[in-house]
Image 1: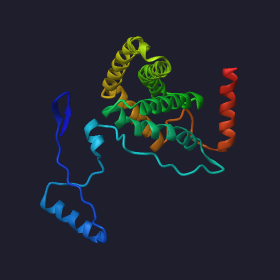
Image 2: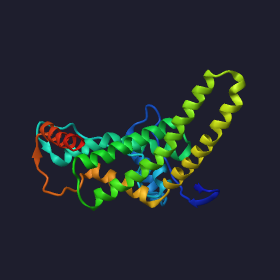
Image 3: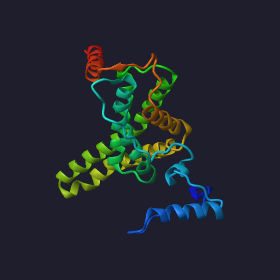
Length: 239
């Protein structure tokens, strides 16, 4: 069952079957057929994390075929989005169960890369606009936690270099930083359960798995030339 804020919000029963070392795979199939005949159980790929969240499968990773000399434009964009999305997907369960600074940092970097890629590759349409807005919101939430982490680490390092009799003063400086960090993480943790965040993961997973909706017909391109042209356009805007 899934417990949220001290109360059960969802229940399920799940039967998992694993082959013992040396067992033949045919035995697995036979047992699965017997369970389907004798019980209401039905096979599913639904993971425990996905069941707990109620929608997006945040345990799925994206495995894409390498780009060829000539590939579809949509495949180039998928390959650009996939690495950062994989990091965000892996970070999600960690962000929900603890406030590990390393996962906060990894998720923030991934969210910023995704937002940048959507902009650099000029992906238009309502889905891209909404995804970029949600990624900006997520970046702000992660950034508040990360900034407090960095500031806290710097104060701790400074305190370690001072004489021991300065420890009370350092503690007085560090205390509000810790309080601010706790408040920022509470906001982030609450946001991870909101519909806009789940919709963001669904949108990005669909874009990488099935291809992003394009503003024009998909076509074969030379990936190197396409990426170089895209990056030059972005650099010109930066300059």
